[in-house]
Amino acid sequence: MDALTENWDLILDGFLNTLQLLLGAGALALVVGTLIALFRVSPVPVLRGTGAVYVTIFRNSPLLVLLLITYYGLPQLGINPSFYWKIILAMGLYTGAFVAESLRSGINGIPLGQAEASRSLGFTFGQSMTQVVLPQAFRNVVPPLASVFIALTKNTSLAMSFGVAEAAFRMKGLVNDYATERWTIFIGIALGYIIIVEAISLGAALLERRWRAER
Image (cartoon, rainbow, N blue to C red; front, side):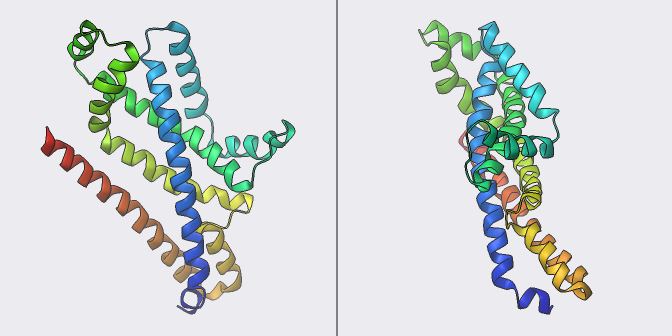
């Protein structure tokens, strides 16, 4: 246990960086995913096509490839943010495709009559989506979105390959320094990830229960 107790500050710092990546990429994914979901159900063919192409590219590309493209490609374009923001950008755009598809399924689950009723009241497509359809769609897809963000939590470990000092990076360093305690280190770091995942699951369950009670 010495590896964990003597390096508690490093482990805590690693998980704080993991949470920062999760929150940053998660916020970007929600924004991008909502926009792409609206594109996917738009009456404008160009927007529908754009949304479909985005989902096809990002959902079917390995995240590590996207990280490499962002990490090495952006500087070639004269854009060179910190490593932290490069990782957030790649993970956010990647996860946004999964958010979009989850949200699109929620939109498709809303009775068509509600959208038609809002249009008969003079709502534009945008107003109908934002004021009538999207609020209900988000309520319908809480469990799938929770699964997406749980996957994102585990995907943050890939940032280790680019020198970001998140939890997996700290674990690798500790294993190198305390080779005889590697299983203790593995289990300790795994418990940290489990706590984060369980917090997401609990939050989703409470939110779903609250929204169900409000119906």
